[in-house]
Figure 1 (cartoon, rainbow, N blue to C red):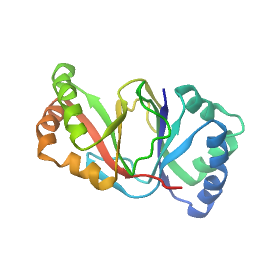
Figure 2: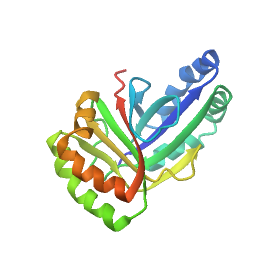
Figure 3: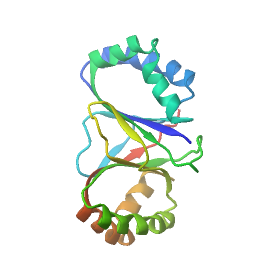
Amino acid sequence: MPAYLVATMDVHDTEGYKEYQAQVPAFIEKHGGRFIVRGGERTALEGAWPAGRTVVIEFPDYDAAKALIADPGYAPVAAIRHRTATSYAFIAEGLPDAQPGQDFGGYLLASISIEDPETYKGYAAQVPAVMAQYEGTFLTRGGQSEGIEGTTDPGRVVLVGFADVDAVKSFHGSPEYAGPAAIRRSASKGNVVALEAFRG
């Protein structure tokens, strides 16, 4: 099953960061990854996401994502990022039936901290039907996750692919989603963003 590395970089040295941008794609490709979000439009829908530029990298599996982070050759490249930006990053496991390589125009990304698991189950039971109405495809929905930088626990990570960013916003603001969303907010705290897909 695929895995997703999510990172938000608050760049404070733009010129220096360009060196990182130039070198990192080769390491991502080496480990089978591809950018699905690389900067672009980002709209906060709920809560607060860390400041900066957000990227999402899809890998064929969890081990491949971790192999990038552990690659000795990547360490000096990561050092450039550490010197030029403040990073918030985590890895999240994809769903077993998620197909790597799917092309979407926009993504909904959420990091959820569940406070009332029993009530949250009501939300989890209702949301797939609403998601299907707006042609959203779950890529992650809970599962294994771990912080890499800036967080030790990203919580329950949800990543959903849509036709475009407008479709993400339409789903999130729809009357059909209002009821389930109210259940979720009563049972958890979360940060939710709409992200534009990378077309590279």
